[in-house]
Amino acid sequence: MINNSILAKSNKLKIFNDPIYGFIRIPNSLIFDLIAHPYFQRLRRISQMGLSYLVYPGAHHTRFHHALGSMHLMQKAVQVLRFKEVEITTDEEQGLLCAILLHDIGHGPFSHAMENSIVEGVHHEHISLLFMEDLNTMFNGSLTTAIEIFKGDHPKKFLNQLVSSQLDMDRMDYLKRDSFYTGVAEGNVNSERLLTMLTVVDGELVVEEKGTYSVEKFLMARRFMYWQVYLHKTGIVSEQLLIRILKRAKELLKGGDDLYGSKSLHFFMTHKIGKESFDSSVLEQFAKLDDVDIFSAIKQWQDHKDFVLSSLCQMVINRRLLKIKMKNKPIDKALVQKHFDQFKSTHDLSDEEVAYFVFTGQIENTAYNSDSQNINVLRKNGKIVDVTKASDHLNLKTLSKKVTKYYICYPK
Image (cartoon, rainbow, N blue to C red; front, side, top):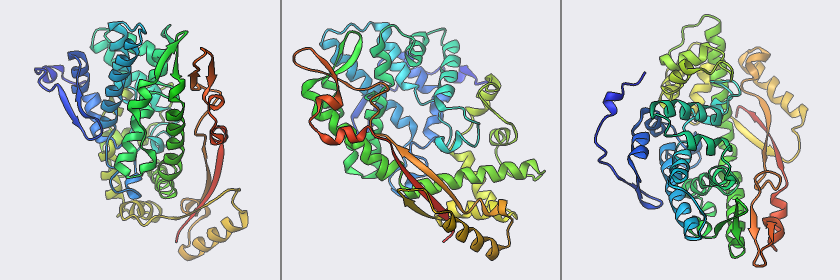
């Protein structure tokens, strides 16, 4: 376990200088101590956007940045709502700030690729909750309200909506931040304006009618960011390569191969970890994992004698990725077979080995889900309607539809 005596330092640092918002103030000693804790400091070594820097060279910011930014926006949201005479107690405010600060603490290295590789189907939200419960024990129950809000168990629904909904502080920060670091101007949202338009009616978070256009711009920005950044084809192929690298490494370890890797990475590569087996000893190992473990392993594995593992690692390290083609309809099987046979005969590989290099998949994107945690607008006459009905923008209804695209990856 972590030696807490090392942490007992005076609370000197009260301000962070953030490139997006300027100075971010740490409001109290509990928040300071949470930020200073090794669980949270680990987020400095977890990239916010995984391998997106292979597309956008500036995208090297971390989850540490994002968590602080989200907390800053939450402080602003509390100010706005209190000004509008929405009751938020000191305890609830503390709960909101802790919940949003820790909302992403369960992310592993290259998060979304890892949810299918290092652990099996254990989402980062579940791991965040485990971290929060562990910290709650260390901090003598100070996070009880934060956990209630995070889980959606708090009687005031709007508190949970500020942390997790389609117009929460998390999204407001990551869209603005990711847009800034990638240089994709279309994703830049006016979080100040959106926050100013928030209010609460019957215990639920709503947007005042004059903020409708700001919400429209926010949803459009989200759509642009998904297609241009988060679901960019180069980002998809690099994430798929990462998943396949870890899959191959696991297979080789199973077969008795002695692969290089940090102790914590080795633990996850040699144990089958699901939701049921994710106990405190697993959490301790997970807390030691970050991007450095993965990259140092890949750098070593690029020289491995196994053709599949070394080739996949070299592709990521040297950015010589597989070719990827996107289509609006499922990929023709004959095309897949053609690339499959070609690569197989060139390198004299088994079908199982070729499948690491030639494969298909699909991606889905819904910019706005009107069925789950929808965004409601408060009209001047007091009526509450969904943003798609409040807007005269035809595109918003289209944004509610799920868009599916299909891809094929194969060697150049």
